[in-house]
Length: 248
Ligand code: NAP
Image (tube, rainbow, N blue to C red; front, side):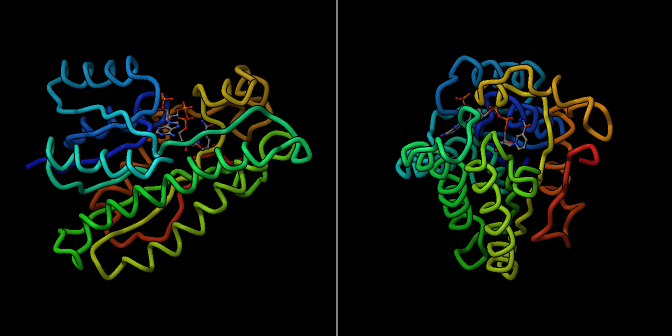
Protein backbone atom coordinates (compact mmCIF):
# COMPACT_ATOMS: atom_id res chain seq x y z
CA UNK A 1 0.00 0.00 0.00
CA UNK A 2 1.33 3.47 -0.86
CA UNK A 3 2.15 5.56 2.23
CA UNK A 4 -0.08 8.47 3.25
CA UNK A 5 1.26 12.02 3.54
CA UNK A 6 -0.63 14.95 5.06
CA UNK A 7 0.46 18.37 3.76
CA UNK A 8 -1.08 21.25 5.66
CA UNK A 9 -1.64 24.33 3.50
CA UNK A 10 -1.44 22.28 0.32
CA UNK A 11 -3.71 24.46 -1.79
CA UNK A 12 -0.98 26.86 -2.94
CA UNK A 13 2.75 27.53 -3.03
CA UNK A 14 5.22 25.17 -1.37
CA UNK A 15 2.46 22.93 0.00
CA UNK A 16 0.88 22.39 -3.44
CA UNK A 17 4.30 21.66 -4.97
CA UNK A 18 5.00 19.18 -2.17
CA UNK A 19 1.66 17.43 -2.71
CA UNK A 20 2.32 17.08 -6.46
CA UNK A 21 5.86 15.78 -5.98
CA UNK A 22 4.77 13.41 -3.21
CA UNK A 23 2.24 11.76 -5.51
CA UNK A 24 4.92 11.44 -8.21
CA UNK A 25 7.10 9.69 -5.60
CA UNK A 26 4.36 7.18 -4.72
CA UNK A 27 2.46 8.73 -1.81
CA UNK A 28 -1.28 9.14 -1.41
CA UNK A 29 -1.79 12.70 -0.22
CA UNK A 30 -4.22 14.60 1.95
CA UNK A 31 -3.83 18.34 1.62
CA UNK A 32 -5.49 20.82 3.92
CA UNK A 33 -6.38 24.43 3.32
CA UNK A 34 -8.12 27.23 5.17
CA UNK A 35 -9.96 29.34 2.55
CA UNK A 36 -8.90 28.40 -0.98
CA UNK A 37 -11.26 25.56 -1.77
CA UNK A 38 -11.03 26.05 -5.55
CA UNK A 39 -7.24 26.03 -5.52
CA UNK A 40 -7.18 22.91 -3.31
CA UNK A 41 -9.69 21.13 -5.54
CA UNK A 42 -7.60 22.07 -8.59
CA UNK A 43 -4.51 20.41 -7.08
CA UNK A 44 -6.54 17.27 -6.30
CA UNK A 45 -8.01 17.19 -9.83
CA UNK A 46 -4.59 17.61 -11.41
CA UNK A 47 -3.22 14.75 -9.29
CA UNK A 48 -6.18 12.52 -10.17
CA UNK A 49 -5.72 13.25 -13.90
CA UNK A 50 -2.16 11.99 -13.57
CA UNK A 51 -3.40 8.76 -11.96
CA UNK A 52 -2.56 9.72 -8.36
CA UNK A 53 -4.74 9.73 -5.25
CA UNK A 54 -5.33 12.86 -3.20
CA UNK A 55 -8.02 14.46 -1.07
CA UNK A 56 -8.49 18.05 0.12
CA UNK A 57 -9.83 18.87 3.58
CA UNK A 58 -10.79 22.35 4.81
CA UNK A 59 -9.14 22.74 8.21
CA UNK A 60 -7.71 25.78 9.96
CA UNK A 61 -4.59 24.46 11.71
CA UNK A 62 -4.94 27.03 14.48
CA UNK A 63 -8.30 25.52 15.51
CA UNK A 64 -7.92 22.35 17.58
CA UNK A 65 -11.28 20.92 16.50
CA UNK A 66 -10.35 21.42 12.82
CA UNK A 67 -7.03 19.62 13.29
CA UNK A 68 -8.70 16.67 15.02
CA UNK A 69 -11.29 16.50 12.22
CA UNK A 70 -8.55 16.69 9.56
CA UNK A 71 -6.70 13.66 10.96
CA UNK A 72 -9.92 11.70 11.55
CA UNK A 73 -10.97 12.38 7.93
CA UNK A 74 -7.62 11.14 6.66
CA UNK A 75 -7.87 7.99 8.81
CA UNK A 76 -11.22 7.20 7.21
CA UNK A 77 -10.40 8.18 3.61
CA UNK A 78 -6.79 7.03 3.21
CA UNK A 79 -5.68 5.13 6.33
CA UNK A 80 -2.83 5.73 8.80
CA UNK A 81 -0.60 8.73 8.14
CA UNK A 82 3.10 8.02 7.52
CA UNK A 83 4.36 11.56 6.89
CA UNK A 84 3.18 14.95 8.14
CA UNK A 85 4.41 18.10 6.43
CA UNK A 86 3.69 21.03 8.74
CA UNK A 87 3.59 23.58 5.94
CA UNK A 88 0.62 25.89 6.64
CA UNK A 89 1.99 29.29 7.56
CA UNK A 90 1.11 32.95 7.45
CA UNK A 91 2.70 36.33 7.73
CA UNK A 92 0.99 39.70 7.98
CA UNK A 93 1.63 43.15 6.50
CA UNK A 94 5.18 44.36 6.72
CA UNK A 95 5.65 46.67 9.72
CA UNK A 96 7.98 47.39 12.61
CA UNK A 97 7.55 45.78 16.03
CA UNK A 98 6.38 49.09 17.52
CA UNK A 99 3.26 48.87 15.31
CA UNK A 100 2.28 45.27 16.17
CA UNK A 101 -0.77 44.68 18.36
CA UNK A 102 -1.65 41.64 20.46
CA UNK A 103 -4.29 40.43 17.98
CA UNK A 104 -1.75 40.22 15.18
CA UNK A 105 0.79 38.44 17.39
CA UNK A 106 -1.87 35.95 18.47
CA UNK A 107 -2.81 35.17 14.84
CA UNK A 108 0.79 34.75 13.70
CA UNK A 109 1.69 32.48 16.63
CA UNK A 110 -1.57 30.51 16.45
CA UNK A 111 -1.14 29.44 12.83
CA UNK A 112 2.65 29.11 12.61
CA UNK A 113 3.39 27.64 16.05
CA UNK A 114 0.22 26.26 17.70
CA UNK A 115 -0.94 24.79 14.38
CA UNK A 116 2.32 22.89 13.94
CA UNK A 117 2.18 21.55 17.51
CA UNK A 118 -1.44 20.41 17.18
CA UNK A 119 -0.83 18.64 13.86
CA UNK A 120 2.31 16.98 15.24
CA UNK A 121 0.32 15.81 18.26
CA UNK A 122 -2.28 14.11 16.10
CA UNK A 123 0.43 12.58 13.89
CA UNK A 124 2.37 11.21 16.90
CA UNK A 125 -0.77 9.61 18.34
CA UNK A 126 -1.02 7.65 15.09
CA UNK A 127 2.65 7.09 14.17
CA UNK A 128 4.38 6.39 17.47
CA UNK A 129 5.27 2.79 18.27
CA UNK A 130 4.28 3.76 21.85
CA UNK A 131 0.72 4.05 20.58
CA UNK A 132 0.86 0.94 18.38
CA UNK A 133 1.83 2.86 15.23
CA UNK A 134 4.36 2.00 12.55
CA UNK A 135 6.57 5.10 12.95
CA UNK A 136 6.79 7.94 10.47
CA UNK A 137 8.30 11.30 9.63
CA UNK A 138 7.40 14.91 10.36
CA UNK A 139 8.83 17.76 8.28
CA UNK A 140 8.34 21.28 9.62
CA UNK A 141 8.51 24.43 7.51
CA UNK A 142 10.76 26.88 9.28
CA UNK A 143 12.30 29.84 7.46
CA UNK A 144 15.62 31.61 7.00
CA UNK A 145 13.75 34.41 8.76
CA UNK A 146 14.31 32.45 11.99
CA UNK A 147 18.01 33.27 11.59
CA UNK A 148 17.81 36.65 9.88
CA UNK A 149 15.03 38.11 12.07
CA UNK A 150 13.10 39.89 9.26
CA UNK A 151 13.65 43.44 10.63
CA UNK A 152 11.25 46.16 9.40
CA UNK A 153 9.07 43.45 7.84
CA UNK A 154 7.81 40.74 10.20
CA UNK A 155 9.88 40.04 13.30
CA UNK A 156 6.79 38.30 14.71
CA UNK A 157 6.81 35.76 11.89
CA UNK A 158 10.58 35.28 12.21
CA UNK A 159 10.22 34.64 15.95
CA UNK A 160 7.45 32.13 15.26
CA UNK A 161 9.80 30.29 12.90
CA UNK A 162 12.49 30.43 15.59
CA UNK A 163 10.00 28.57 17.78
CA UNK A 164 9.59 26.00 15.00
CA UNK A 165 13.36 25.42 15.03
CA UNK A 166 13.32 24.72 18.78
CA UNK A 167 10.18 22.60 18.40
CA UNK A 168 11.97 20.52 15.75
CA UNK A 169 15.01 19.87 17.96
CA UNK A 170 12.99 19.00 21.05
CA UNK A 171 10.34 16.88 19.38
CA UNK A 172 12.94 14.98 17.36
CA UNK A 173 14.62 13.88 20.62
CA UNK A 174 11.30 13.16 22.31
CA UNK A 175 10.09 10.68 19.67
CA UNK A 176 13.37 9.37 18.21
CA UNK A 177 12.96 6.09 20.10
CA UNK A 178 9.39 5.67 18.84
CA UNK A 179 10.11 5.37 15.13
CA UNK A 180 9.42 9.02 14.28
CA UNK A 181 11.94 11.35 12.65
CA UNK A 182 11.39 15.12 12.89
CA UNK A 183 13.24 17.55 10.66
CA UNK A 184 12.76 21.00 9.18
CA UNK A 185 13.37 22.88 5.97
CA UNK A 186 14.34 26.55 6.09
CA UNK A 187 13.31 28.13 2.78
CA UNK A 188 14.83 31.46 1.82
CA UNK A 189 13.21 33.78 -0.71
CA UNK A 190 10.72 31.56 -2.55
CA UNK A 191 8.37 32.76 -5.28
CA UNK A 192 4.87 32.21 -3.85
CA UNK A 193 1.81 34.27 -2.85
CA UNK A 194 3.10 34.71 0.71
CA UNK A 195 4.93 37.93 -0.21
CA UNK A 196 1.68 39.48 -1.47
CA UNK A 197 0.14 38.56 1.90
CA UNK A 198 2.87 40.69 3.47
CA UNK A 199 1.85 43.60 1.24
CA UNK A 200 4.64 43.36 -1.37
CA UNK A 201 3.79 41.12 -4.34
CA UNK A 202 7.05 42.10 -6.06
CA UNK A 203 9.29 41.27 -3.06
CA UNK A 204 11.07 38.38 -4.77
CA UNK A 205 11.98 40.55 -7.81
CA UNK A 206 13.14 43.37 -5.53
CA UNK A 207 15.41 41.19 -3.40
CA UNK A 208 16.60 38.65 -6.00
CA UNK A 209 19.62 40.70 -7.18
CA UNK A 210 20.93 40.77 -3.60
CA UNK A 211 20.78 36.96 -3.24
CA UNK A 212 24.07 35.04 -3.66
CA UNK A 213 22.51 33.12 -6.57
CA UNK A 214 20.88 36.32 -7.91
CA UNK A 215 17.43 34.78 -7.93
CA UNK A 216 14.58 33.60 -5.72
CA UNK A 217 13.81 29.90 -5.38
CA UNK A 218 10.81 27.94 -6.59
CA UNK A 219 8.28 26.00 -4.55
CA UNK A 220 9.43 22.84 -6.36
CA UNK A 221 13.01 23.35 -5.16
CA UNK A 222 11.76 23.41 -1.57
CA UNK A 223 9.48 20.41 -2.16
CA UNK A 224 12.46 18.28 -3.20
CA UNK A 225 14.17 18.86 0.16
CA UNK A 226 10.94 18.10 2.02
CA UNK A 227 10.50 14.84 0.11
CA UNK A 228 14.08 13.80 0.86
CA UNK A 229 13.67 14.38 4.61
CA UNK A 230 10.39 12.43 4.51
CA UNK A 231 11.94 9.49 2.68
CA UNK A 232 13.84 6.43 3.82
CA UNK A 233 16.94 8.01 2.24
CA UNK A 234 17.02 10.18 5.37
CA UNK A 235 16.66 7.22 7.75
CA UNK A 236 19.39 8.41 10.19
CA UNK A 237 18.51 12.10 9.91
CA UNK A 238 16.45 13.61 12.71
CA UNK A 239 16.47 16.97 14.48
CA UNK A 240 18.14 18.37 11.35
CA UNK A 241 17.62 21.37 9.08
CA UNK A 242 18.03 21.88 5.37
CA UNK A 243 18.41 25.51 4.29
CA UNK A 244 16.90 25.90 0.81
CA UNK A 245 17.95 29.48 0.45
CA UNK A 246 20.36 29.81 -2.45
CA UNK A 247 23.29 30.52 -0.14
CA UNK A 248 21.58 33.40 1.66
P1 NAP B 1 1.47 30.62 0.60
O1 NAP B 1 1.74 30.57 -0.87
O2 NAP B 1 0.97 31.89 1.20
O3 NAP B 1 0.46 29.42 0.96
C1 NAP B 1 0.09 29.24 2.30
C2 NAP B 1 -0.70 27.97 2.43
O4 NAP B 1 -1.02 27.79 3.83
C3 NAP B 1 -2.03 28.02 1.68
O5 NAP B 1 -2.32 26.72 1.22
C4 NAP B 1 -3.00 28.43 2.79
O6 NAP B 1 -4.33 27.97 2.59
C5 NAP B 1 -2.42 27.68 3.97
N1 NAP B 1 -2.85 28.24 5.23
C6 NAP B 1 -2.65 29.50 5.71
N2 NAP B 1 -3.18 29.62 6.93
C7 NAP B 1 -3.73 28.42 7.21
C8 NAP B 1 -4.43 27.91 8.34
N3 NAP B 1 -4.70 28.68 9.42
N4 NAP B 1 -4.86 26.63 8.31
C9 NAP B 1 -4.61 25.86 7.23
N5 NAP B 1 -3.93 26.27 6.14
C10 NAP B 1 -3.52 27.55 6.16
O7 NAP B 1 2.78 30.23 1.44
P2 NAP B 1 4.15 29.52 0.99
O8 NAP B 1 5.10 30.58 0.57
O9 NAP B 1 3.89 28.36 0.13
O10 NAP B 1 4.67 29.04 2.42
C11 NAP B 1 4.54 27.70 2.89
C12 NAP B 1 5.37 27.56 4.14
O11 NAP B 1 6.73 27.87 3.85
C13 NAP B 1 4.95 28.50 5.28
O12 NAP B 1 5.10 27.85 6.51
C14 NAP B 1 5.95 29.64 5.16
O13 NAP B 1 6.13 30.31 6.37
C15 NAP B 1 7.19 28.88 4.73
N6 NAP B 1 8.19 29.73 4.07
C16 NAP B 1 7.93 30.34 2.88
C17 NAP B 1 8.90 31.15 2.30
C18 NAP B 1 8.69 31.87 1.00
O14 NAP B 1 9.55 32.71 0.62
N7 NAP B 1 7.63 31.62 0.25
C19 NAP B 1 10.12 31.33 2.95
C20 NAP B 1 10.35 30.69 4.15
C21 NAP B 1 9.37 29.88 4.71
P3 NAP B 1 -5.41 28.89 1.74
O15 NAP B 1 -4.98 28.76 0.31
O16 NAP B 1 -6.71 28.28 2.04
O17 NAP B 1 -5.24 30.29 2.26
